Image 1 (cartoon, rainbow, N blue to C red):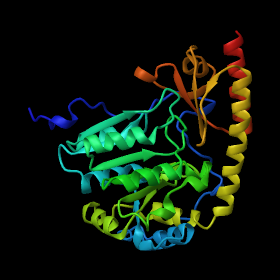
Image 2 (cartoon, rainbow, N blue to C red; image 1 turned 45 degrees about the horizontal axis):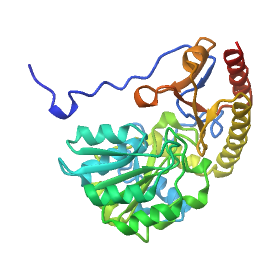
Image 3 (cartoon, rainbow, N blue to C red; image 1 turned 90 degrees about the horizontal axis):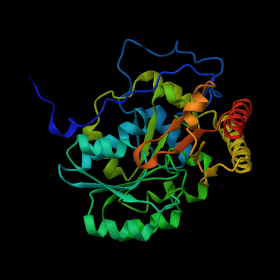
Length: 343
């Protein structure tokens, strides 16, 4: 019998839940507002390998972000880039540190590559004490620190000044995952600080604000030395031509994206008011989702009505993450919750 390597023997296959639904609010997906009529693939040369350097995509990202294209590396979703950071910079048994609860793949990729994951607990209200993080960094000396802000699943957004304080206190590589930044306070982004700090990288995605989860496209902004190092590790032709073309075209539709984001923010605030009126415990929301707590088995009750939300287990049992939907979807959610809560 051929045994798996020890680092993955306790991992469970990632499986999405296949359930019939009327309203899907469980995966923080966006809406297809950029390409409602589809995408013309006729200009893509399917018989040749894609551009290994994704030059057109990276140039348009450079224009969008106002950073040199040499500081950008593309990926199959920001998830691939998280793993590439660990593969490139973290040796076996070195530490990767984050604040928990957070995106589960940080720990999974760390363990796959035989490194040690250290999760620093957030406060009871899921806010983050940056001084606690700095003390933990000094104690554990991690090679890589990953901060998700706004955080998935809690919705908490860190202040830029806090991240700068951390950067100034350590030589560890700090990766700031800004997958949901378009829905949050943009002034708290550290994207423009990448040129000032040699130990800072920022991760972003097309899956949320651009509504393009299906094409699996993300990108990393970092110092050229880090981008060049990642280039040694990423597979040749790792990003297919279809994703490159759709991403490049999406970057010509920034105004449409921002208009849709503004509508999500408006709907998010309406949902928060509705949840408060129903006396549902909510937490500050900065993404395209809301994190709530309830003693009622909401996910089960809602699923029976055709509405999917994300339920958590273990230490987060009784907590739920609900994607902000359209006005119509949110109205169906609110009506269902009223029926469940008020019997």
